[in-house]
Length: 194
Image (cartoon, rainbow, N blue to C red; front, top):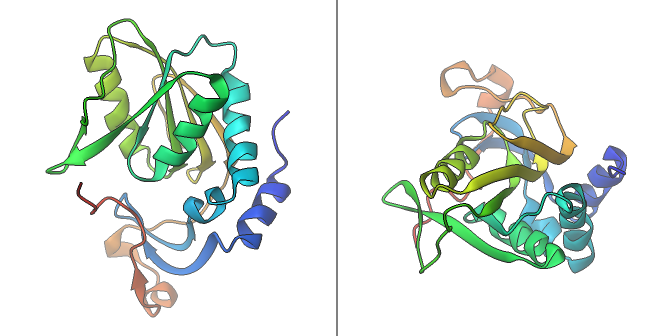
């Protein structure tokens, strides 16, 4: 049974993870709201609850490995893998390109689940899915905690989110005046290099 949206929003509020202001998202879009999943996932009981919902959804899909995009997806992906009792890896950007590094690999024919914390446009997930396909592995599904697109993000595999939200986003050239007056914050991890 899917977790009630009100319960999840309450968890985000209690942990100060639902931020309000003017944010530039990883996608480059601007928004008055930001889900800082890391603030929720620092608490083991919430990490287990949210990752457990994703794991339960895919428990009979014969997943062999979980892969997540760095940085946001790593914690939730690792917990999904732990719950399922399978190997977990992550992809990260090197010179702006999503890659498998640190000796990680995906084997030909492996059944793979992609796990992310928040999906807005699905760009990072698409990049990770391309790595799965390039490895001749089988993409079993995609799971995330928050689907900010409210179901608009489309993928070539079964997609499951713990919670869907329709959060307003704006291209940089179409920011409403009231949002333009608020100082910009860029909390995403796309600019991080490792």
